[in-house]
Length: 289
Image (cartoon, rainbow, N blue to C red; front, side, top):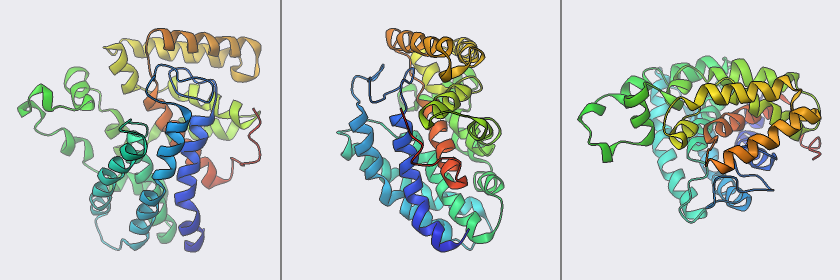
């Protein structure tokens, strides 16, 4: 892949991935064109505004990745972190202070930056991510015992209570759920793009600890249940069978009734869609609801 192509497409692919994710329907625990799900402060239009506002952020991430010539890739991550903080402020301005894409700002910013660097250097993407984020979890969770409870983020509280490292642990490991599970599932999927992304999303749900779900449920005991529900959907044939579709609608009702969210899984779907766009396994003319 040439640097010219990298420069012109990486940032736009990131925005497209976010727009693709919110367009998929029906999604249990998430906003889509047909439903706000358990998120009464958000609509699909909120997500569109948010995604479009973040294009300049991803363009800066591309520039950072292309320009970096240091020996320590952890320095590259430290360079983009302030960009992410400012991007979150941009997002909140665009959404009237609604948190639509905080997780994507973190993870997609990493993938965009690493992709630009890896493409230019001719090195492997996932190992670039792992090297960039070496020591992230230990660094970010250091000293939590000295913080008061009202100073802790939701992710820090989950780490202290349940030992869940969340997206930091996933990122430092090089996004194994995305690279080892979700992306292969997307490659092998069939049907319309909506069907393919639905089945990929539920594959993610079946194989990850979604911290948004744990936060909404109030404990980590919800995770085995979510895994079983997603596995039942896939075992029933997924989005392309009546039994699979009925299971999906059932999950939609349960998640809305119980105020459960799959925001972490949605972020991983965004990453998977981004990589799918980079590989060419997603074609924008194949979206047929």
